[in-house]
Amino acid sequence: MKHSIRTRLFLSISCLIIFFVALSLLLNSQYLGQYYLWQKKQSLLEINKQISKKYQGNPLKLSLELEKLEQNKGLSIFFIDQDYQLIYSTSMRIIEQPSILLSVQPKLNALAKGEYFTGILKDTRLETKFLVLASRLENNEVLVLSTPLAAIGESTAIANKFFLFTGLITIVIGGVAVFLFARSFTKPILQLNDIAQRMSKLDFSKKYAVQSDDEVGQLGKSINSLSDQLDKAIFSLTEANKKLKADIEQERRIDKMRKEFINNVSHELKTPIALIQGYAEGLKLNINEDEENKNYYCDVIMDEASKMNRLVKELLDLSQIESGSFKLDKTAFNLSS
Image (tube, rainbow, N blue to C red; front, side, top):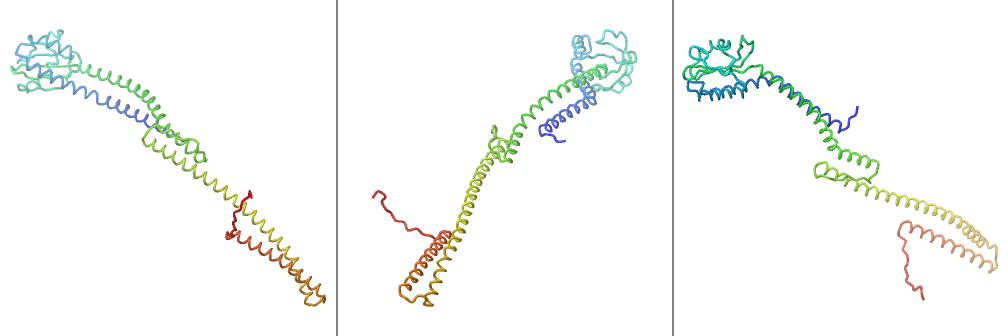
């Protein structure tokens, strides 16, 4: 099945758009969660540094700032003393040591001052997984930051759905844009193709309207120039053919006239030759002995010889005319006198 260049261009670019949208969706579905988790870890590290710099042993002095962090970042913040007992929490619902702190405790034993660890831990009481960052402060207390993984998964799912929606819109809008672009891009090419087809049929009336100086515009100028040159060449060739045809017809007429003339001359020569031959034989045989008849015979012979001489000159003139060596004797004279 034959497809036009416009259709091929539209399908090619549309397939590229669909491919990249699908590739982006695939990458998002596979790696957006991991990237979001990594970003959360970086955010927890930054918050941990901020709190560690400002903390002076009493978390209540930072309670307002800690609550803002909890609300803005979706975190739970805990302070644990040296005996691993909960001394402060931003979550008012927690009135006793949460089970997540119990799971953190073995890992805290290996931490030195200023060190931290991150991990995904499960709160057995809430049956929920958390991303946890725990660090040992200068006074040997432990700062624990946690955020539920459910929020991360939900955010990732929402982001993927939104990107799917925007991807579909991109495909639709991109398809329309590609169609308009393909039509605009191929329009001059189709015009050039139409002009070329007309030229193949010896129709040089249509010209390309050059609107740009790019490769297509230069091609249009070249086709216009070629069209003009071919038109002139074919016109000249046509005129030359007409002249040649007229010359051939003229040559045929001249040849016909020459043949007729030669036939006429041949016929005209037969009579004087026969007369000359007959009268010459009569003179030789002395058929008429009187002087008057002999003079008559001689006059006939001379007259017929003169006719033959005139015919021979006409033949010579005809030969000179055909060879182009015939010269006219031009004489100027006054018609009014």
